[in-house]
Image 1 (cartoon, rainbow, N blue to C red):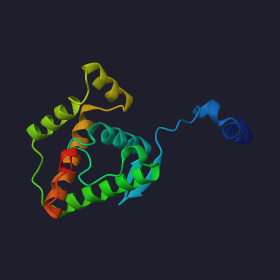
Image 2: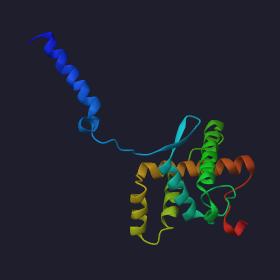
Image 3: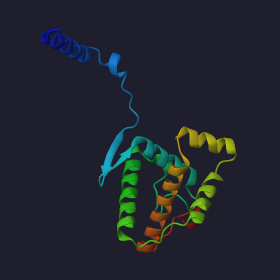
Length: 167
């Protein structure tokens, strides 16, 4: 076969890729949206959604956000994103400052169990985990971050997480 034949085949294939990309590559799917980048770390829409759910569940319990929050019913998406950005910055400061002891496995397991106990049944907990596509590793990372941020705020500002009884 001649070289010209191969060129025609390659050009035809390239043409088809451009005209019908979904037939070859499949339909593109958005897995998550990056809303903002903080210190090189993306903050995704699913993370903000999970953080909102976490705040709703833990509000007034002494867990959750270590500083005062506005009324959660009036919390706008913009304000929520601002809180998540502040949370990221606090975590970065806690990590860089190296003022915190490592989070122990027992403390971490106790915090996860404490959060799990907010759900009335195991089924409700499983639905929450499924809805947010949480893995055991992600839960450990999430709660380790929470503990580090709360400890850092308490260390630096002398403020511990507020519960309704503290207000």
